[in-house]
Length: 430
Image 1 (spheres, rainbow, N blue to C red):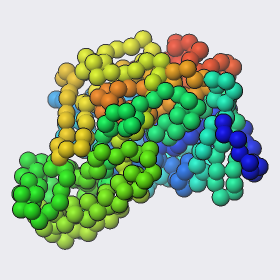
Image 2: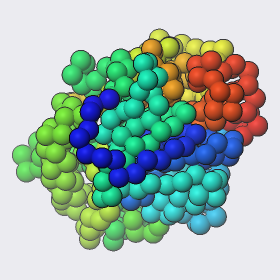
Image 3: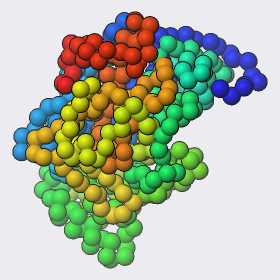
Image 4: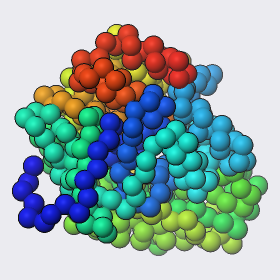
């Protein structure tokens, strides 16, 4: 840990500390609290949900693609979807790109749902707080140093869950990882919603027709559209459509100067794609851009090296593991820096397992990771990063952390049979 000259303004202790409250961290916090652990969530924004409430509006990965949609994520994620359904804030939506049936929802309602589920489970929330460094004893993480408007604070925990997306805690603790500084990572996307859309006419525009119009726009020289096959889809509300169109490539999301430029470029592209839709696509003539994402969506940054590393071969062979904590049937969906997207599918109706070992940073104790910073190679990550799987990983990490606390053990010392039993009781699909 870096030596800080300032005196800590506050010192907090907890059984389980969850850093980041995106779909993985929020689920982890709820799971750990429901298992009886004291839980503290540290979140840099003023709300929970991460990408799920500030960028995207669809849970993918809950269902397998193909002829028949098979549900492969369950447990606490089901509670989230049930709450969305009770608020009439979600719809089931076939995915035009073949990644499986999506659950499209209202991100603002989801902010409240994540928060209320966490509080009812007994978790404590600490918003507007940014983790700066780790507290360590040898190879063991014992907490973090964080900062907010109240000053520097020290948070000690028996187990830390890194759900930061960028593996910030793991990196600060000295864990091995791979990032854009080593290999190319997927491009970034700024999403936006459109209102005043004639949704009946817009829905009649097929994927092929939309892409053809994009190609025409690009060839005309009047539009700058880096991505040639972006999507626009319905939402739970009449007259509103959501987009996944912009593309900012060749960015290291852990370099703040590059990330700043990506934010600026993503918003510029959002205006350009809006102009294209209004000018050339039926149904969008009177559309108005709204709900621009709070930050650009990062698909991939740091990926840790864990006790096991999920591989491209594991994904495409639909491999099963003895320490499975979740399933995934999503294809490899690689958003590279070019104008298209590379898709590779599993055999029809198949899934692969996510091993518990992928959540354990190699050589570091007292720490679990959950979400897109898991241990996986680039291609495997392009499949397993879906929010449904991030929620399932978070659920497993939360349960494992609570069990480790109750047994006074390290997370990697847990008998898998115990973890499996608790996950199945929650409703996880293994």
